[in-house]
Length: 191
Image (cartoon, rainbow, N blue to C red; front, side, top):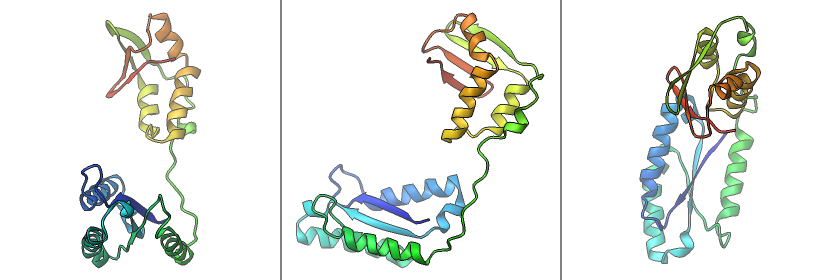
């Protein structure tokens, strides 16, 4: 419900926290523009490793960049705990004021769409260490399964096992580390 950007304000790894936040927001927008409607907070961590003068300069730069966009900045030290309570109270206040209606996510896979087990598929060895699986059933499964989600990936693994695809690949001599191609999807085989 709230996006908390935890950034290295001290830039101990040579990263620019402003650039990091902008990149994350760009990626979130590309993934789902609705996510960017969520309120955001910046937790500027590792302030304890900065000299006070540098800390003020870094925090002010973050505030000048993000607070005009309605994104508050909280300097914190996860090690000492400095500023953490203030951040937590602010986030708690934000959560208390948000709409409490449950969020309904799109389904990650459509089991009923996979019910037609009569649709054919073919498994073959394309070349050394490369196997292919294609057919209407495979195409449908890939179209209706979100492989980026844990549940979708579990469904995918169960689908391969329950439909005998893994068994057929093993009968063709697949070995650990070999590649399986299902249309545009490529993955390495491991037991």
